Each structure stands twice: as C-alpha cells, then as structure tokens.
Image (cartoon, rainbow, N blue to C red):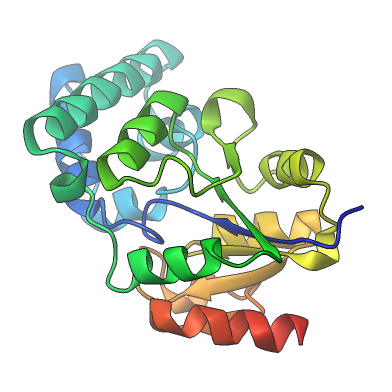
Length: 223
C-alpha cells in the first residue's frame, strides 16, 4: 500500500451544475418516446445513477424496450446540448471548484479521482471542456461498473491507486454517493449545493457548504 491519500469526486451536482441540461435532455427523451415527463424533483432524485437504472425508476410502467429508447434519446439530446453550448457553459463548475482542485492537485500527498454515472465519452468531453484532463488519476464511469451505490467504482479506484480505504474520501451530493462511500470503507463528504435533500444523506460523515471548506475538512479527517 502507498502512503498517498485519495479524494474521489462525484461529477454532476458536485463538481459541475448540469441541472439545466439534465432536465432539458430528459424532457426531450420522454417526448421522443411518447411518455409523460416525470416531475423535476423526480428527475433530480435519480441524478448519479447509471441510465439503465435511472430510466426504470422514472418510467416504472414502461417496458424494457421503452427504457432503452429513453436512454438512447437522453444521450443524444444531452450530447447535442453539449455541442451547441460547450461544456463550460452547459455544465459550469461550481464556485470555488477550479481553485480547490488546483490546490489539491498540487499536493504531493494526494491523488484525485472521479466516480460518475456519466459515460466515458461524456466525462471526456466534460473534462476537456474545463481543461481538467490531467487532474484525475483514476476515472470511474458507468460504462464499466454497476450503478451507484454499488462500491465497484471506488474499489476500482483503490486498486488503481494502491490507496487503503481508510485513506480515501468520497465527495458527493447524493445519497448514492454516500452509500457507495460507506460500502467501500471510504469517508463520505457531502456537499450541500447538489441535487439531493439534506435529509436523504444520513450516510454522510462530513458536510460542507462551500468548495473552499474542503481542504479543512480533509485536514480534520486525516489530521
């Protein structure tokens, strides 16, 4: 095992605010398939899940074929929005995110990673749009893992970096992130600016209300 420590970030609702594009792409997908659009709260409640898990939750009475069609239509609409507006505009970084990422990335005792329900293609486009391609040593995406809150993504991050679970934290905004962290033996740091209500995040061990508070939170966890 290495002496390094690992900080893994969720993406949507944690690093970037992609709410507008998520809602717009969902509206386009449900219209394309001819199904009633769920409420905004229902849509935001599934952010963080892989699409193959999210769509059956949003359309429980639809069949598997319709769920696959929703996935395809959502992906197409989301990527089109990204092309039209660019990643920096369609999914802007939250205030303070860029500065804190640069600060943490400069430290020799830390490695950074992401664990996201996005696809490999979607994450690549986002990181490229924000100039973050070289920041995250380990990048876990929905293409190769079961959906959150299964701990597979975080277990893979540990295997890739050689870090022990007790030296790792998961930073996220949803209950899926915090449940995944707990299942993998990570400390969960919940951000308050994301898409899940505070009452749904009982698994979080630490809560921060602004990005600039993250370095201090890490210091408190590790000493």
